[in-house]
Length: 99
Image (cartoon, rainbow, N blue to C red; front, top):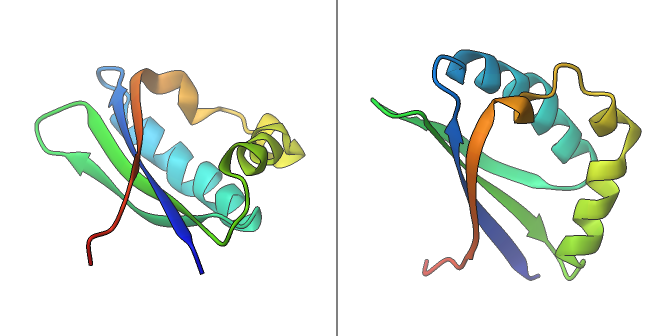
């Protein structure tokens, strides 16, 4: 079975890391899991306003189509407060395992 993974590096607005992490853990993660995604982990870079996480999708589903379903899901659009409001900058790239 194919596995596609994405590395996401967010710069979080100064002083908002705790709020972001709580919203990500309590809101984003459960909704992602509910819609068939795999969350491989989330990390805070010490001494920086950086949050890093890896999101994966198993199988041959189209990433963009699956993302569209997630972002328009009632649970996602109703998320309040939306932790994304604390993201100042986003870096997103697909990654491949060498293991």
